[in-house]
Length: 309
Image 1 (cartoon, rainbow, N blue to C red):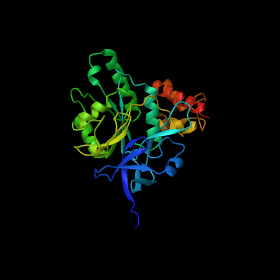
Image 2 (cartoon, helix red, strand yellow; image 1 turned 90 degrees about the horizontal axis):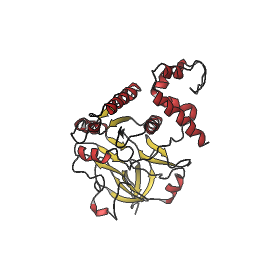
Image 3 (cartoon, one colour; image 1 turned 45 degrees about the horizontal axis):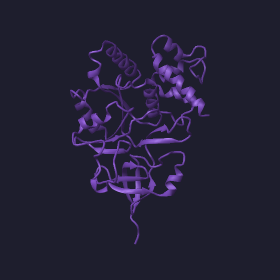
Image 4 (cartoon, rainbow, N blue to C red; image 1 turned 90 degrees about the vertical axis):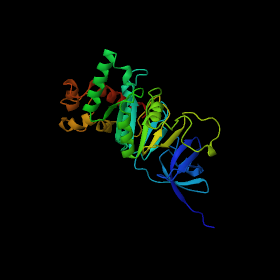
């Protein structure tokens, strides 16, 4: 009998095991990846990622379809391997907080650069607004954050799960974009946001039929959830660090929109925007049109890339 190759989206990744569903139909079933697929992706810790569209037969993934995009990071400090967080993402939502915990701005910039480099639309969710409003210093930081990132061309949405602020707008956005990725460092409130978007979900244990559950489930899994209000979202474990992958140092500034906007005015081409005379980017920093914080992140990325070479 001829084997029938089915096609579906990877909706859960638990080590070497996966769940696949023919989205938008929600009917997850367990599959495993062939060994040759794992070998073919030897540069990555996970050659099959959540969001991948795959062909499978008799419970085994036989092929991974070309990706339209992906969010990828270097797996460990000074490692040559990378880790694919998710593939075929319609919008990445980076959840950040200014306190409890404070998301480091270089982390934010590395995430944003990676999304632009790999063609992933990205927006920023500034969570825990209730913690900032009674603190003059934090509100000043909030205003600065909006000024810097909106000035660079990014959408920044304020959220507060405790009073529901911004949740309905986010729910509508998730419905319209299709497959949303939620990411951020541990403690920024991703799970609380997901439960606020759809109270029927429990990001720690829900989303897949109990028929296939084995062992104890934690937030170390990468998983897609269907939203009752429409659309799908990918929940990811908290990320401690974010190293950029396969971006040449001379290209990094292209993924800073505010730098790219003025770089054609630089005297020298190519220009590293570090020491060259009549550099439009350096002039923009000196004049306050490009934030010093973002420029510092850029310099840090140049230094980071040098360590890998």
